[in-house]
Structures are given as structure tokens and as C-alpha cells.
Length: 453
Image (cartoon, rainbow, N blue to C red; front, side, top):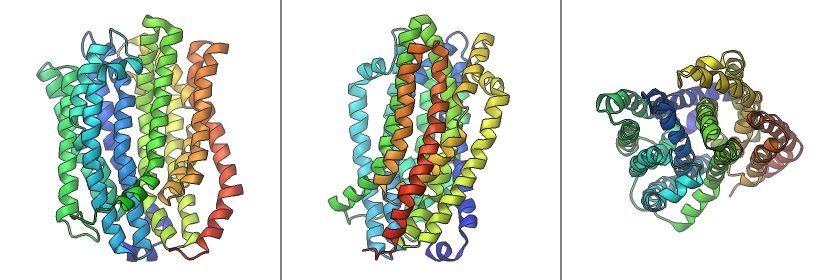
């Protein structure tokens, strides 16, 4: 890892690390999208089941945020330490991350099951949706340990330059999920419960692959026992907390949208709009997961060269990661504005639902090219441990979204609430670029000129 990072060009490394990580997220998308496709086409209850998954999604994504908090925080600390030549600290980062994920998994599982009913109603479930949402949520939560450990520790595979192997770990789980979904949902007649069971089994398969690779493969840094340290755990959290907070805010935004749709649309119209929003969020998974895959895969480049004090290469990382993210999201922007109905038909056979959702999707995604700016700069700064820079520029965009979701229904028709995504993405990207080049970049240059301790 160290030799290649020091000798290979940044464009080559960004492509080598970013592309497999992006492709891995395409397969990772199958975890949620495939469930929604099969569930949405269940005869008779498909639309209600789809809305139930949409209700559960924010809570389940918030839980996986713990995996990325520890995984990104620990992997970034490991890479920074490797850049400084401190292998002992790098090993501490790996060992402490495993321990943290185990304890967090236990705590989250118990807490989520105890407060399940209150949580789902708070997320926007009504009496019609709750039975379906409860069934899916309960089974999914029982697989929390596999989910968090598999996703969290996969970051250490990516951070050591094994982007292909990190991609394989996700593909294994995704393929298992695709195979088992129709078997459990239709073959065994288990409906939404079958979707959850298939997902949990697939997550267990991913976890087994990741742990086996990190324990038995000859790596620069393997999983070990010991070297546990409260101080190291604190450093991991200080870096990873940014990813956690962003995910929580993202999920709050989804919950707020569902709540507003129910508030202004009522039970009947509200459920219809929530189902539309669930499909739109499925498309946004296509936007967000591969985009974040690029920045996650390349995060080790930011961390390593920051640890080595190489300002020029860090700036090159920002440039080429932005270009790669922009190219990907540019394609999705064109598709969402020209053929949104093609995507929507995958989830629903109802002509009215397809027509309405396609129109709302076009509104929501007008500004997704701005998401490339957010990912490149926010995630790059996070990988370097620069939370004081990353959080404000990320929070500004999310605050705009929240304001739009709250205010737009007061002054215009309910369907225009879906412009909140476009407004926040465009304005947020402009704010991020201005803040980076005017305030952040000069401070990074000055800081990296100093000796790292």
C-alpha cells in the first residue's frame, strides 16, 4: 500500500480505488432496492408493503450509520497512521474498531426491539402500515451484528488498497439476497418477512467473507487481539462521528418528508405520496451509494497523503474524485430528466402511481450534480479528520432541505415539496465550493506545511 500510494499518479489511484468501490455500491444497492422491487409487486398488498419499507428505511439506515462511523473513523485513523509510518497505531485502530462494533451491535439490537412500536409510529407509520413495518423491522434488527461488522470492517479492506476484494464482499451479499428474495417472498409465501430474512442471511455471508479476509489474508494490517485503548476509540469516534451525524440528518430529512406528506395529504393521499417518496428514495440510493462508494474507496488516499503531509497530492485527490463523481452523477441527472418513468415502473405497475412518481422524481433530482461537490469535499475532509471544516458545509445543505420541506407546503401545492432536493443540492454545492476555496484550502496548506506529530 505505502509504496504504490507514494509512486503511482493520483488519477490512476482514484480510478483504481474509486471505480471498484463505486461498483460495489451498485451491488450493495440491491439490498434495499431488490427488496422494494419484489415487495412492491406482491399481489394485493404490494403498495402497502412498499410504504412499510419506506417507513422502516430511515431507522435501518441510521443503525448502519454506526458501521460507517466506526469503519470510516477507524480506517481513516489507520491510513493516517500508515502515512506517518506508525504501524502500531494502525493496528490499534483495527483491533479497537472490531470491539466497538460488537458492543454497539448488541446495544442497538436490544434498544431497537424495546422501542420498536414507538419508533415506527414516530417515523410516520399509521395503523394500516404498522403490522407490515413491524414484521420487516423486527427480523432486520435481529441481523444488526452481521450488518454492522460486515460493513464496518470492509472499510479496512478498502483502506489497504484492496478495492476489488472490498467489492467482492458486497457482491456476495447482494447475489445471495437476489437469489433468496423471490424464494422467501413468493416461494414460501412469506411476503415482507421473507424479504427481511433474505437480507439478514446475505449480510451474514458478507460478514463471514470480510472477517475471513482480514484475519487470514496476509495484509499490512490484520485483525488482532489486544491493544485496546479508550484513547484510540476516542480518536476513531472523533473522525467517524461526521459520517454518523450526516447519516442521522439524512434520515431525519426522510422522516420529515414522510411526516409532512401525511400531515398535508391525510391518510389516503398521504400514504400514496409516501409510497411515491419510497420509490424516489430508491433512486436516490442510486445517486448516493455509488457516489459515496467513490469517496469511501478514495478516502484512504486523502488520509495517507494528509498523514504524510503531501499537500499537492491531497489537492489532486479533491480534483479527480470530484471529476469521477461528477461524471457518474451527470449520467443519472440525464436519465432522471428524460426517462424517469422507466425506473419507476420497476417498483409499481399502477399507471397513476408511475405517472405521479415520475413527475415528482424529475423535480427532486434537478440538482443532483451538486451532490458530487458535497461528496468530494465533505468526504475528503472527513477522511483527513477535518470535521471542523466538513460538518458546516454538509450541514448547510441539509438545513436548506429541512427549511424547504417545512415551508414549501405552506405556500404551494404539496407535490412541490419534492423541489426541496433540487434547491438544497444546487445551493449547497455553491456554498461548499465558495467555503473550500476561500477559507478551507488556505488553512489546509498552512497546516500541512507544519510537522505532523
